[in-house]
Length: 234
Image 1: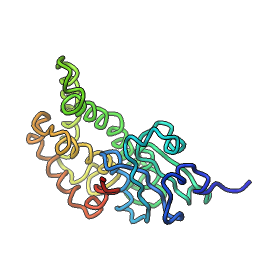
Image 2: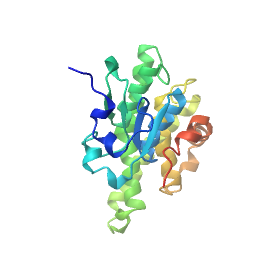
Image 3: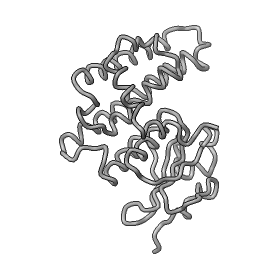
């Protein structure tokens, strides 16, 4: 049986590759989407970025790659055993890229799993809570008169931010001296809460100096400067 190639993925007919041998990224510059582009830039991996509008994630072409209809997703034409592989869920993609390309993840086993622990913390806590707070504070949910949903997410978001604040009390990055996928997973969400949800005041970010200094360090990295805007918004 022949090995699977990029051409075997229906999504490649809708978002046609210019350079099929490169890793293909299907994304939009949301906090989840930019995690992958930042990681690829940090690792120096050549890739092709396809802009997927959020209303296109429910199309048959996109669903053929990610049945959960969320960006980002990738196809690696040179996946395990040299066969093309599709992958979705930003945390899983970060771990895959870090392991394949040997960066952004400590080699020591204990530190490796501690890093993954912080990625899961973002996936299960920071992302969902800040995202729900954004919905109830800035988007359609703001028209709901009952303040309890918004306040529930605000309070929990603040609690999670304080976890990060304490983690950064005596270290440059989430894992200490080494910048990892933990930083890449977490910082776009806090940045988005501040800049996109306009939630800095409500979440009292000014009272979190460790986070603010860390955010600045993350944003100033050359890979972040590129990855935060790739693929560029229309």
